[in-house]
Amino acid sequence: MPSLTVENYLKAILQIGQRVGNETVATGQLAEELEVSPGTVTSMLKTLAESKLARYTPYEGAALTEEGRTLALRMLRRHRLIELFLVETLGLSWDQVHEEAEHMEHAVSDGLVDAMDAYLGHPVADPHGDPIPTAEGEMRGTDIDAVPLPDCSVGTKIRLTRVTNQGGEFLRFLSETGLELGRVGTVVSNSPAAGLVTLDFDGQVVPLGHAAAAALLVERVQ
Image 1: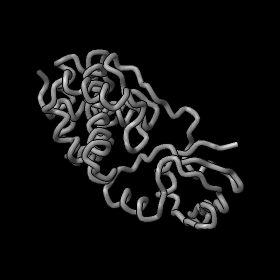
Image 2: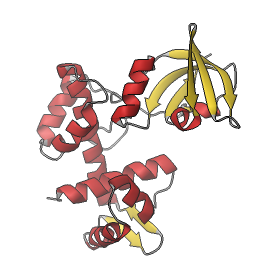
Image 3: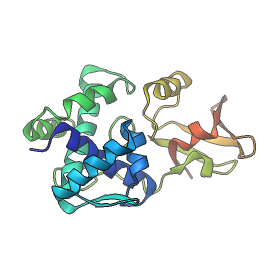
């Protein structure tokens, strides 16, 4: 069985690759994501390559092999189903579940995860809008129609579908502001020069810096 560290690296390579749209993930990106030194990452990537879980190229980075991708999707499925289960059954808030899922995903059995999946009605997304893989590694829910909020022009009506920054502080800010998944509003200003996007939700005006806005994926509403 792969170690906890190996599972974390595989999942990180998969998630970064999905975010940046490139199968090869740079050493520096992994170091930042996992909060470890580049040297530590290099050492682990060599280990993953020896185990045939990743293809590692010095000074370029690593890409998952088919076996590595299968394991990474298995961990992603566990993580996202556990997050949703904790929200739906225990009433935890979306800013509380990430760390809990990080610990639990390595300990639960596939059978328990499948039982959670069935109990929740085979959901397509976790509490943050991230798509949940099936047991076969296929994504049930995708956000192919979603775009980062700063890409929307003034006057665009939008619906919030996914949050990519899942830090507790940021999620609490969104909750306090009333920015929940599914909420519909209108872009009333978008100034790259000022670094500001402003939304209107039925009279409630919400200004967001571009960094915060870029972490929100939305779909355009007709």
